[in-house]
Image (cartoon, rainbow over all chains, first blue to last red; front, side, top):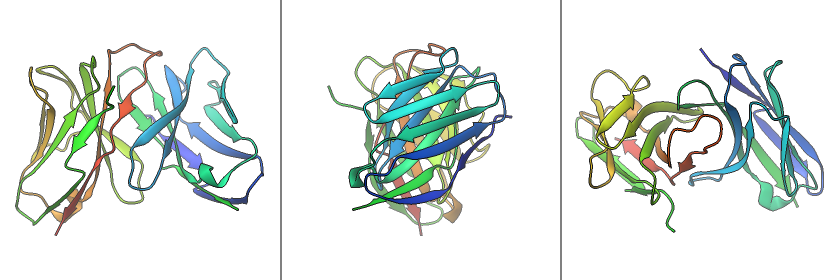
Length: 111
Length: 116
């Protein structure tokens, strides 16, 4: 059974800092891994999708890496801004269509 | 091009009542997924449907919960005789097709169910 763990559960940083969010999964047989952003009371926004054959994806100030063999992914956020404050969710897709989510990292960027 | 739509956004029910949650997928999407997010928990898969077919309901509680995606109209998640433990955010997602590694699921804003 696939399990996804995200560390830390919460993170508070000053504006401008670079930061790393961690995600680990127990079963390396995945199709892809996604990072989502969830704002309070809102739905999920897909940030980056990494296919199992890829090692990283970049979008603007975001960079996600994937090490499938060790069951790990990181989300790197450069030059953080208050608008980046949200909960970041990691999800993996295995042989079925369902996504398996971690509990998320709640990020607060202080002005 | 509207995204995934869910209604109602907030729903309050008393114990024993029925809750009906609706999801309209994005235009051109024929695959719908329902997830539940309990307080302080991650999203948990409930059910995956295509038009008129339930493909995977491995995450659905065995009793009181049902889902459908008719040929016409939105997908419906139905919870009968709600209990306080059903209070959660219910998210719907849709995709164009089942596509292995390439396709992402697009999520709606969720329905927050509160059972009194």
